[in-house]
Image (cartoon, rainbow, N blue to C red; front, side, top):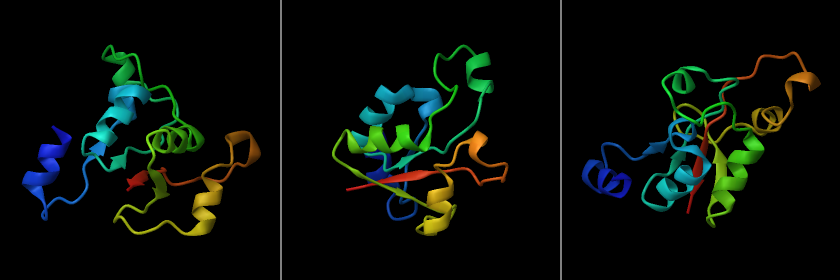
Length: 114
């Protein structure tokens, strides 16, 4: 389905996102191999999907996201909302844990590049 969406909607829609909250780590890897090129961002203690009965969605750290992307032979790239490359400082800051800092951080979204 993701591959068909990329073919049909290109060039109007260039990026198709898969959601770890809905799909879980294994489902994300399958979707990234089947046409999706964007992995949904980090959420801390997501509850909406779990309240609806899903078994995924508690938390996926940036390290876990990168590991999932690399496990299928793709290179992760942190991006901005408009798909530009995230500044190096934002990338570094996304790996700092809550107990390491009290700074607010924007959500992390990773794009899986070929």
